[in-house]
Image (cartoon, rainbow, N blue to C red; front, side, top):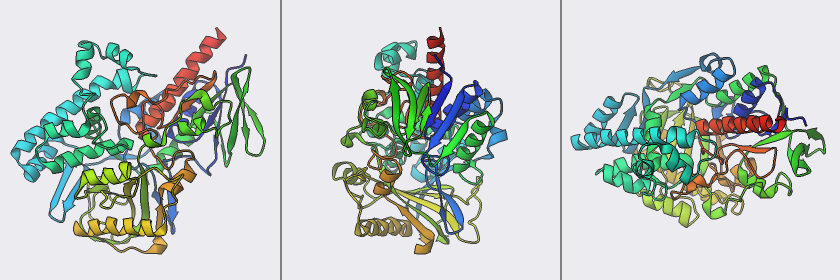
Length: 500
């Protein structure tokens, strides 16, 4: 039986990583992507004559990408131009309430002291130590593990077993843990935002997400010309290793023979034989039958009520004035809980949204603003109902009014030009990523068991594997890349077993 022909469906970062890993091992790899190029959610769009990142904008966990490149016989530095950021992010609540977090922990602590008082400085340092401990506890037994279970995690945590696991607060919510760490509500709001990195609410996500604080403190890098260049670089690397890419290739069905994967059928009825298939897409697309009804039971569906957050984004080229933007800047709403209540309970756009801006032309050293119009990605969280709700123009206009009014209250003036602006709604994200409702992170990480509910790389169908942000270990560019590594490792191990 042949086991060396692999088809990867989807050229997101998980699929690209799997292609690199498998092509480097000598397998026959074909990547099929229905879009016109690589990236998936790691995409960019044209606004006028300029191109802007329209997906993830933060590069962290550099060690993941270094390991991928090293396994492929190259180095991250040889493939991608990176620069370490001095300012991790700038945060604002009003025109005179600002707080920067820095790559240097002591500098961040001093900034916290100046912002909220010396007692909060000490609490911030204690919080940072807790975040580091959680990350170190989970890095190997959970983040890097193929398919962890609660019992398996207890065993792998090592000394302390269940006691050691309880120390990382898996049963507390992130918000309750932050309430114990910080007295200043603005600091709870700031660090509570880490729940949104996996499309979740800080009021329902587990306290283990504190580890994101350590991930950022460990380093945030800027990718030259934008994060989409990471996808382009990985596609080039996979190509050099022998992987073939076919764009505008819509896969309609995963074909089986005697219950095992044996090929894929495209929308034009072309058939491509395969001994194994990796689907790098939202797992609910499989459960919804978008790759054929014969494999829809390979993974459980994601109930609409358990979807992660979606977003409304404005990609624009505009002149700015007033507030000194950093590369990453967050403007906080006055009522954080009401924001998530609107999105998750009332299923509507937030009346008072928190706003994230990526100023793509700002450098790693927090230099002055560009002289001319600059490239901006503005994002607010939204409900993942894009498959049932069209998001009318009046709703978008109201959300835009609330969004840009907050920016003005914080001192930022943006000279908006409709001809230089592109808006993306949850309904549009649903069209880009079907069967998601526009959810950008798979299943929401609500409750302590949520992290164990994500499918692993292996499925019930022999020869069918999964990768991407909706699978283990979760959403985000480095996690999706790890999912690609896990899929490639699982496929390789099963291939050896079959040959034996």
